[in-house]
Image 1 (cartoon, helix red, strand yellow):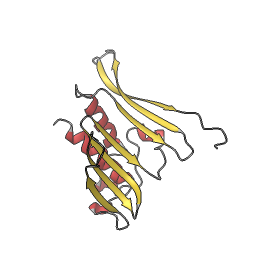
Image 2 (cartoon, one colour):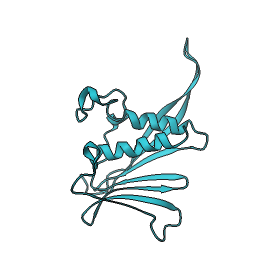
Image 3 (cartoon, helix red, strand yellow):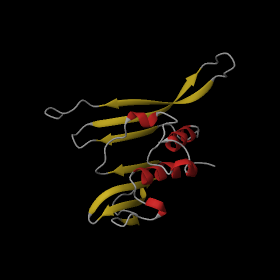
Image 4 (cartoon, helix red, strand yellow):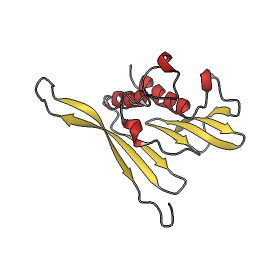
Length: 166
């Protein structure tokens, strides 16, 4: 299994959430470019979605890091961290999971890999705030019939709004 299935799931969730490729085809207003940026020694590849000259989303791959950069979007609501939340945007019974179930499963799978120490999502708002989601493995003691285990926990932190921002 390795890293590919959960990384693919994170990238697919981004593409679906931003509606970059509805019905499996690139949105007609967008262009897609895959390149190795010059001058970025550690970047192995960059997958960039653009609308004309404006960046919409980029997926940057490094040897030990995956960065997904979303432009012109708002941070996900913390309810996306809940499981089993129905997704009104999905195609009904023909689609799998609720909103974000795939990315939570992917995060748990990645944290189960010995080489993956942390997963952090950083959202930067137009108002200059930074919101961070740190995905961590948390130890749970045995209780009754439940064995001791390691579970997925997400710590959400946010910077205070800059002076004058709403």
